[in-house]
Image 1 (cartoon, rainbow, N blue to C red):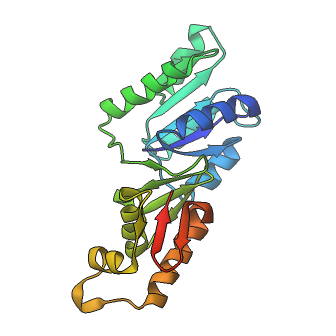
Image 2 (cartoon, rainbow, N blue to C red; image 1 turned 45 degrees about the vertical axis):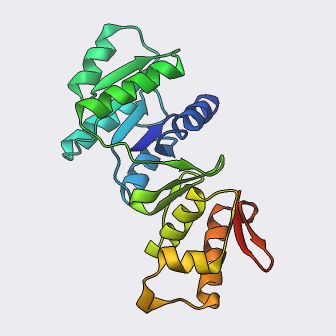
Length: 217
């Protein structure tokens, strides 16, 4: 599930990003301008917009997106207690709202409710470290909040290491489980794939055991 968060409060945005990225692919925007720049290249399953941000506020942004026929579900964050703002939020296209201050578990429950209502599939996500996670079904890495596409072979190799963590995997084992019999790779080809994966996930996770193979930790 891909979420776009717009929140100008630096402390709150850091808290929300750390929490949501444990389970979802989350991109961040400081204001409406950053939202539009992000939407030029990516599509999302859910918007989480704070109402009070610099420039165009969250409700104005949401209304404009709806006028452009963007039907992405949206949760608005508000510090207002006046029901007039809540009514306006729904009139402008919000699907749910959450009032500040709120517990992270409440936000999680509202996100999960949107998933159920809009039948948004939750993709399997493997956490590699605090900054990197892997979605095998999509052949994608989420690194520092950015989505990176992997080649089919790199994705299969990384999945194999994840499924065989903390034991040495030899070149021969990789060949038998990743490649077809009629397309045997050279050792140089395997090293090239290993190098690419290390650059993406961090060298410390994939070690060379001299004379034996590779160890994922």
